[in-house]
Amino acid sequence: MSRRGWIGFAAPAAALFVAFWLLPMVRLALMGLDGRDGVSAYWTVLTHAQYWRSMLNTTLLSLAATLATLLIALPVGRFLARHPRFFGRGLLVGLLMFPLAFPGVVVGFLVILVAGRQGLLASVTRALTGSPLVFAYGMAGLFLGYLYFSLPRTIGMVTAAAQQLDQGLLEAARTLGAGATRRFIDVELPALAPALMAAGAMCFATSMGAFGTVFTLGTQIDVLPTTIYNEFTNYANIPVAAALSVVLGLVTWVVLYAAHTLGGARAGAAA
Image (cartoon, rainbow, N blue to C red):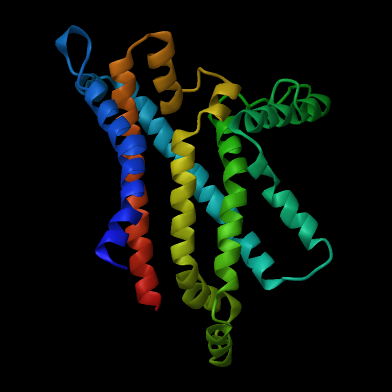
């Protein structure tokens, strides 16, 4: 491609990048420098325990949801890759992918239908024990919501990666006497590691910024998206909301960068 052709190709992409990402992010970061009583909002965020608690809750919950998602998606994805044809496979895959069509608000509503005050679990446990089991409106309910909308994407990524495994390596390991567990640990898991890291990073980033689900379950849940919403909408504290948004973005970016770096290194080692 000639230099003129390269410039003509890159210029629209650069314009979109500057207009729709760079300038808004710079503006957001600069807004965090303002604050009340002459104190930068970044300093306010760093020195108030409530913001640290919100960030810690968000990070730990996102990590827990990511780990649970990977633990469930790995065997499901391997099963679907190993069994490309069986009765009802299309229906099963369709049901597993169906949550992709739901926004966060609908996911939150489904969690309430399962674990809310009038939900399925409450009705069953009330009939069996006389005391209803309700956990939809706290961290446990939010964890279930994160798990619900993270599983379809992760299962799809793990299935695609498992389908690309070199079956010759597995056969060679079997010929050398390696059992199923050893083949999984020594051959399959290293080959699937880049896909698992990419899927885990996606789950973590999505959970860190999810708002619709937590807003549906209850605004009293202390996670960062609701804290940003409250600062911006209820308290009109726009500099703090901007600073918290930048902090949220930086934490998520660090995790994504680390996952990309480790995934690339493992892929290179596997090759």
